[in-house]
Image (cartoon, rainbow, N blue to C red):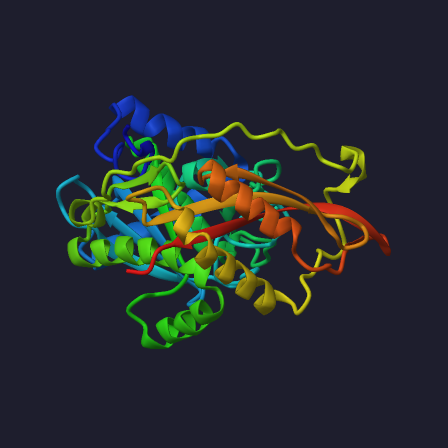
Length: 388
């Protein structure tokens, strides 16, 4: 069976070019909005001169954007043919950032995603001046994030305020809107935007990331994939091919060639009794003022996850080194874990054991909505990985 379920569209459409009519029709459409027309009138000549000063051809046919959360930076790279390497046009300052390091996994967590995305929307009527939408959730996010409410509406936008997006100032979003509009008009339908936790060539940033990973060990597999993509681009100034395997993991071009997984022998399946949720669905809160809290807080919960992952290693399929398992669970209004169900990943024995461990957790501090305790459904990825 092919483990690659879907391909993250980062460069597969980069060679498509449009007709002369197509090149101008998209830009003309954008200019039909008064605000955008004014932006082009004021800024295009300035951008052209900036490109010329740096020896770049205007307008760029291909654009690549890299964003670094901890460093609060956004790089804009450009080129004009498929084979030539990307060249850096400019680095912009991200002026506000919500959340912390780590991926976005549910609606309302105020996290900026991390991973491999592309621009799928140009919004000239944004409440944040101008905005460029990203295709979150992507194929990996749909497997690993909350199945009911993964979140969405992630944009690069102006106005310097955010609740989980990537804000730059209005002058900068004007530049970016023009540059990407031309690339889109000339055939680059999927303008890649890769979001990294840190600049991996900045020792101070990497030091912070290392300290963060000491606490949040389950985050390391994603960081490893992101760093591989970062290093590929640093070496080649070309964008790596990125795929998503059946576990929701990213697979990066260079890594896949040298790190082929051994064949996996699945354990025999046994019939499992379907579990019923003990609380009526209408009593499970979807929006709360305060999330449930594991006894001892975040560090204690991470320690529980790490121990659980280690305990489950013997239950991996033969030949399998790792599994990334998504478990949904409910903390009732008394703080008791009353239901757990593996949504993705694992085999029957592993899943059943994991569900029992989650249902046997100590009592939590329950979620609060309008000053009253309420039941809440949560989702968590558990990493089960054999030692190297």
